[in-house]
Length: 116
Image (tube, rainbow, N blue to C red; front, side):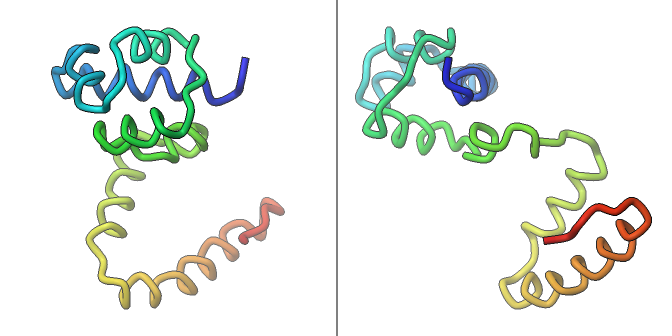
């Protein structure tokens, strides 16, 4: 089984349910069939890009949820940090990057973790 099959299936099912959509509705909106959506949600699908792209876009799934599931953190502190970052302008974000790297570097110097 491909490593992305479970995160993809989980993300599609969770998001579809949260939006109150049926598999048929998702299939119609993305130009595929409900069997394909069902297979993806049951970890049996290995969709081609022509199916995956509209599916991810329609459901507005963050691709990191599929390709970097270990980065998904639902804790209040991470959500607050993410909100602050997403609410920043491009200039503010550019200013924050070296500051955050510096702070993380100082915090991690004790543990030996490297900041990239």
